Image (cartoon, helix red, strand yellow):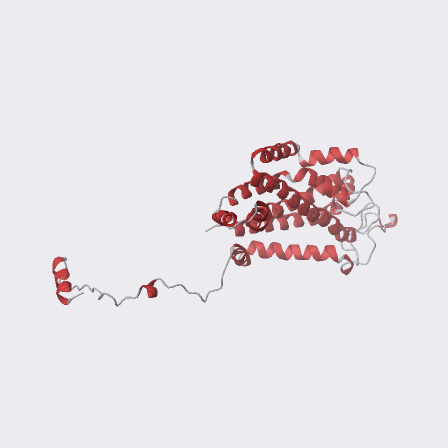
Length: 325
């Protein structure tokens, strides 16, 4: 741009006295300096962004500490007590706390602290195993229906509707009443899985239907990838965030369901130490000695609260729409 051109541009524009405008000469500004990208920054993805968000979330930190402590108690109960939870002496029935027995004794003369510690393993095992099986089974049913569509989706959706119409706790009560000859943790886990997978299936179906229409799936198909490979290698990994959220959030409800079934007397056998069983045994002396009921109930409430807080934190991290500003 010549000097005459610059002078003409200044003359044609309205410039106040004392005000100057600068017009950069052509060729002096390089485009790459303006639109350059800093390639020194490490590559990121959804999971890395989620972890970065979780580390700054106080809700996640508190819940993670609680869950780690609960898992440690469940794995190593002998660190906290050296007594047998099934060893009871009627001579100590309803005795108050004493050195070595901080929670006192129940009606059978069993140490409440020992039974509360060992009950952690049972309740946590039921919750985690049920959540894993629900995520696996529900994800398979939902992913197949959402990916293939058509009559496959219609058939699997009606199959899901049948089980969704049955409340989980009510269905578990009916099935357990029919098979009361034997009792084990796996029986409770399988029954809760039978009636608890429907919500996960719906979430997985919606996530797969949304993900399969994205560009990367179309590009993979154009490059010769088979439908099965697309589903396993591309669609499911990108749909798993929603499934993890529902699995983490629902884990606490499975622990409560096990405690409810044991409270009703149709869950785990009396020889198995669990919070629900101890709560059921303590209801008869609720008016006279509520402390026996308090400790297993408090342990159950803290555990469920920890997993609910963890689920909320994971949801905020993996779902950008639910993040607070």
